[in-house]
Amino acid sequence: MSHAAQPASRPIAAVERAVAVLEALADAGADIGTNEIARRTGINASSVSRLLATLSRSGMVALNPETGRYHLGLRMLRFGNAVLSRLDLREVARAHLRVLAQATGETATLSVSGGGEALTVDYVQSPSSVQSVARLGRPSVAHATAVGKVMLAFTEQPAAGPLLRFTDATITDPARLRAEIARTRDRGWADAVGEREADLQAVAVPVRAADGGLLAILGVQGPAGRFGESERRTAIERLVDAAAQIEATFAAQPAPA
Image (cartoon, rainbow, N blue to C red; front, top):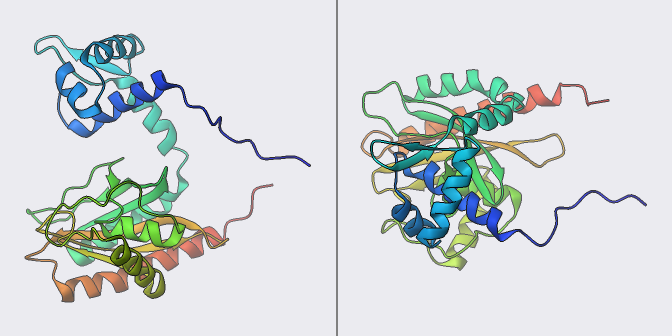
């Protein structure tokens, strides 16, 4: 009997540290120095310096010679584009994101589940001057976002790590989160009202694969003063319709030979 290939169970510490450095640079949103990377990753500064030197030689990290700070290199863009080019899902969903953003007046997002997180792979920004900002590759906080709750509900995995509090509305009690995830699964959508950011409200729905698994997550998010309960209800209806159309598109595709 053949067995599917499984990843090795013993990770390489140096690679894990390099990945942590790359993630710190990606999350920073601006050039940062060695000491700041060390603070964010918990890796000592001398090790960070050696990792940066190695990553710089490969083009994955670049140094700003004027400031002595670092940012991701252009080679990372090549890797990202290689992944995104294989996501036919983005091509199918793009038109729906545009319609959602135009119809709701808010930012529409497309996310996929990976590595215990829901990652944004595409979005269309709100046409309004005041916008909820989305970023490609940004992971959603599973217990504090609508997209994250959908991921937990439809992949049936527990939230990783401690339930950190971001606002007074953040769910930090495990029992309460389990009840919230069960409710999300039962009704087929999730909301997050000021749970990740006090002024941010969001709703999200699953896009299911033909085998019933989670193909993607569609979301709409906006500022609390404009995206209230009535607007969220309307957005949910539109999200459910868009998800059904995307599901139908993939269901109609022939299976690979």
